[in-house]
Length: 124
Image 1: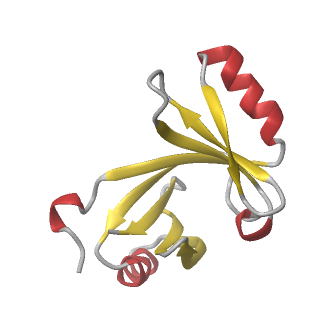
Image 2: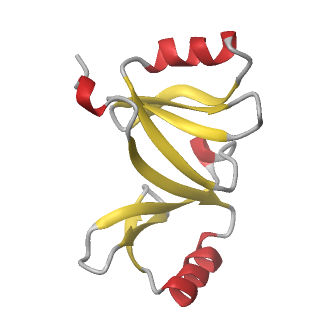
């Protein structure tokens, strides 16, 4: 059962791109971010670190299961049920761009609203 007090909250953000190292270096030089490698089994994505060393976002390769993820900063919002939220998205004029599928052990999907804005939904 989900924690209802966290439903609807932005809980994560990441960027998925083809040229991760160039984009990582860009943000390092422009905003001063530091990074840790995040092992993806055969390659590394990058954890974005805040000034205290906390992981606050990710920069990911657009490959494998992430090949269809659009190249934009993607916000993740918690929902009670990804399946139900995906169905509601479709029945209210939206699109499903990716998923529903698992990210680790959590179901998630990426939706596009009727205006064309993209958001990820992740089960709380």
